[in-house]
Amino acid sequence: MPPVTTAPKWNIKTGFNGDFIFKGITVLFAFSILVILALMIYEMVGESLPAMRKFGRHFIGGMEWDAVQGTFGALPYLYGSVVSSVLALALATPLSVGSAVFITEIAPKKFGAVVAALVELLAAIPSVIYGLWGILVMAPWLQKTVQPFLIEHFGFLPFFKGAPYGVSMLAAVFILMIMVVPIITSITKEVLLAVPQSQKEAAIALGATRWEMIRMAVLPYGRSGILGAVILGLGRAIGETMAVTMVIGNAPQISLSLLSPAYTMPSVIANEFAETTSKLHSAALMEIGLILLVVTLVINALARLLIWSVTRRQRGGGH
Image (cartoon, rainbow, N blue to C red; front, side):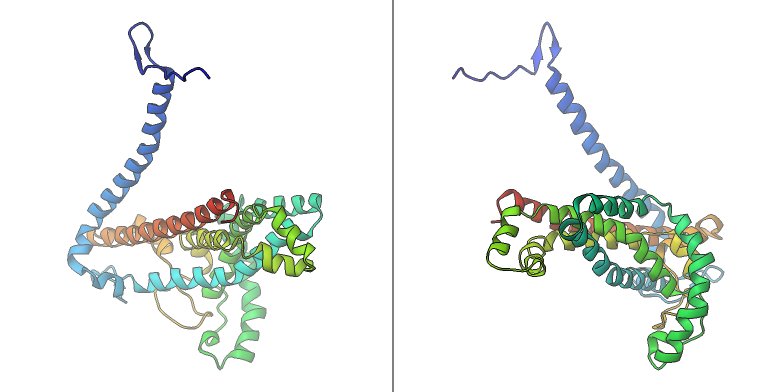
């Protein structure tokens, strides 16, 4: 075999080698993303400094938000974001995983492809359309049917006490559930398709039913990827703005009742940033944005790590 020669990076007659230029441009583009992210964090930290200096760590644990008095605390917004996102995931995960299993393992191939396309189409709907549907259709339905039923039959629980407002934490949970289902379903479907066919056939050959094959051979193989999909859905839910703003009620309070209005970090930024009354007010909103950015980055990084682990295992033959 003749020796492999490497083209020189520089040639007096031809100048830079094409591969070298292409590599340099792609590296520049890749690092530009990191530079943009670093600049965003730098600017947000700089704009948040007045609030950081005045409130310190008490900003995260503060309960009061009063722009007139210059007192700001982010705890009600953190609570609203976390609770609405986690409850939405608790409802969306079984629905999404079940849909992905149906598409990949149960439905005929053509019908499964149609269902997958329809599910993914939900992700293309703008969030403001979800919010408009939520405020005009879902919230009145909750107010007239679901919430009175919950109050009548489960009102003794602290989670279902109060009046049927319609716009509430419960409405935000339902709208977020609908919005994250396409993301979790799509990623879970790809994870399940990566399960080796030989592993499924081996389970069937040992006498397993289709359900037993799915439970013992398919889902355990893709559990890391499914968890990554769920965490990506969490990142989507916790950063959602318009739809949640329109249905959650926008009341900065902490209540165990899902029927009470609440507030989230993206919602308070969207509602108040254009009408800030002081530099401290805008700095407090920017600090909330910084907290939201950090939380979202951590969530997405964790999800990518989990998805990478399952794809690496698939490339290595399951070892």
